[in-house]
Amino acid sequence: MASWKNTLAETAASEIAEAALVLPLMFTLLLGIFYVGRAYNVYAAMNHAAREGARAAASSSCATCATPNQPLPADQVATSYVAPVLAASGLDTTLVTSATPNFCSCGSDTCSQPVACDSAGTSAVPSVCVQYNVDLGVHNYSPPTCGTAVSFQYPFHLPLPFAPSSLQTVTISTQAQARTEQ
Image 1 (tube, rainbow, N blue to C red):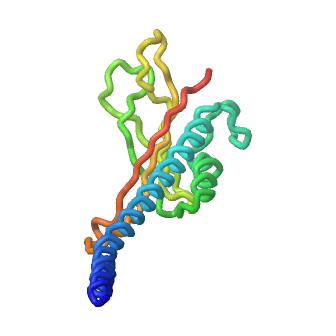
Image 2 (cartoon, one colour):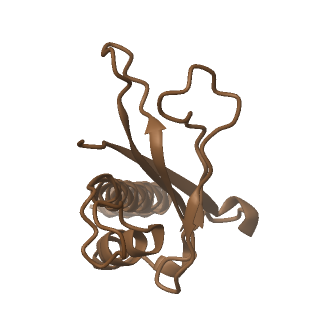
Image 3 (cartoon, rainbow, N blue to C red):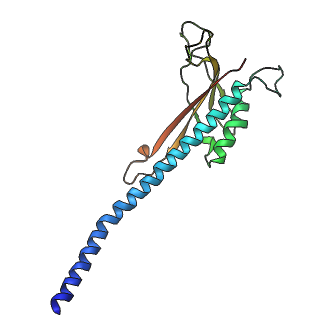
């Protein structure tokens, strides 16, 4: 009878020791899955916002502009199209920074100077790069494929245990293009 009680006590002690080793690893894995999922959610929201901004910038129907058939200004693209999508996903739109991709001007044979950003500097979204009349790189058609590009970056905080704070922020970039209908 005494050996049965000793065996039971030894088994319970080993289960506690195994749980003490496995549970922290399991919780770390679950938190990692959660944070990677959140980073993917932020990336998807940014892509959606950039696509909406590019689509709006590519349409040549600015109702509030002084000249008709003019593309939407960059500040209106950022305020009316990019910022609401980011805000709906719970992202702080004041943390958006500009990213400038190298697009060539539409119709130019050489790309000596990339198209400059028409950055939106509103309080809703500080830095969204909108590039108008860019070559989208589709070379199968005889007239060049022209359009607009919208790009920006967002810092994502990834809390890593025992890591310095400089390694805990990852900058996620996005870019979307839309063909200009003429």
